[in-house]
Image (cartoon, rainbow, N blue to C red):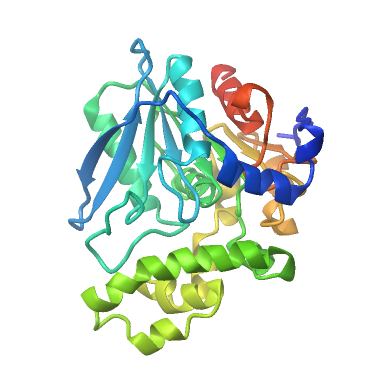
Length: 319
């Protein structure tokens, strides 16, 4: 499909990428979402915690929500979407990736941008509940890459999956990593790395045969983290192998589910390769919207409903 002309117009104070990104991540509050936790056991005996919120009346529709790097199911960009969809008759299943629900996961491995086996486990679990005829998937940042990879790497997806919405999508992981490591994003990169290393510390004690203190101390940047931990813990040769194999960009031309990608042009986390204009024009199931503003997951709009949230609802109701 051709690129969609965006109608997003932020408040005057939110036009700068840094402002919209930081405000949305640290200052936004969403109230009125009641979540109920369900734990599912995975095939490798690890677990995922799912935080459910429900519409007042059953409609047979559910949206799966996937958070970003070091996020969780209580982040406002997750609960904001859950609230809007619940208010419009759609249940929400907010996924906490391994180790992100407030309790360490059991294994040395955790989560990563391409871990579609865990998303598949969630989809299969929901299908087994046999309550839903329509499933939508909305991913944010890392979760957006995962969602697109999930529907793109398979020739067949469950017929119940009707749409994917991908927000602030680093579909070329190497390009996005390069941007995060640039000087303009130094403050973000430091914050991410602190969180990641803090979560890795207990694994030093739990799995001493997998990682040494020297390995841990060698991690000075995000790419070091992916070299030392992410790649080795998840079956990749190194960080570059991980970036190449886990990026959704290579799978976009095979997507057979209507999928909306919203990437702001002033998103400092995204490289030029994360705006897949060529791939979108080759696949009638893809829709790409590139607002001038919005930063990284910072699509501030009226009444505390973000632009990407009501666009997601508009997209799925228009199918």
